[in-house]
Length: 142
Length: 142
DNA sequence: GTCACTGCAAAATCTTTGCACCCAT
DNA sequence: ATGGGTGCAAAGATTTTGCAGTGAC
Image (cartoon, rainbow over all chains, first blue to last red; front, side, top):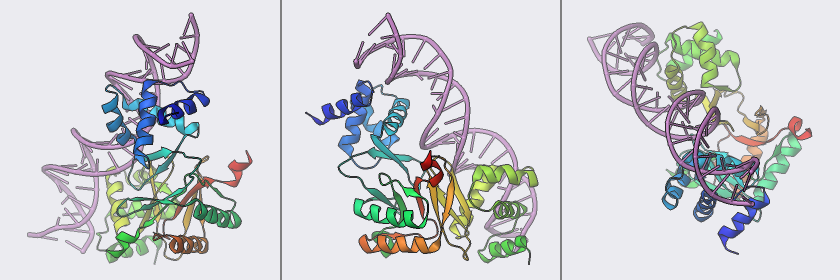
């Protein structure tokens, strides 16, 4: 089963119809991987499917988010970012407030942090989109 | 020295002119305390100083942020939030992704998390505006 | 055939910017 | 008197929404 077919099956499993728009959007997200903004997906996906409207991207991303297929997170700038949720690789994000680079954080570390926070507060971190802000090694040297 | 005078002195120390607009904006922030959006400050401060423009709030907040007097952080919705930086009480934020409530996190906990992250990555968390997303106790019960 | 989905256009937010005037220093 | 700060208006960017038509099921 190809990557596209797998995603289509995933869509149907969640009760979504598999439209050309959604196929292209999902393939774009899967192909680019990592961390994307709506604008980035729009720029790339419209080349593969001219006429694709940006409102469709927003609605698709929102739907996929509700279905648990993508995770959303905020960056220091104003755009909302998101990525495919891969059950095999849950992770978090370290975002550099200087260069805005996004670094992935291992599950083990997230769980460690989650346990500490849970033990000292009544708060339960979401391991699937834990996002921390700070300064990366590269920017700290400068 | 009153609260207003202290903030005015703080402004001058950073090389800012003390205008009526800035005085009102700072007093509003200090009075409301905690976590505010630009729109919230605008709504309240314009009542005290009619004619106050929202662009002034944005410019003031940006200036104060550069001077280290206020911290900015992102929430799940689109508005940027900020608060006065109080050197006597550095802390972080736990934001509930369901009710959007903002809970303060103690410095000790932040430092603990910061050490762990630093030891396992090359990333240095900013203790003055560490923000974590998750689900608060109240929402988890429902 | 249904109705979820899409494109389009318009609007709603949030934020930034150019410019002329004003006032804190 | 200087130039940093402000108001105003306009633009920019991101995101949402109403509506009519279309295509996946």
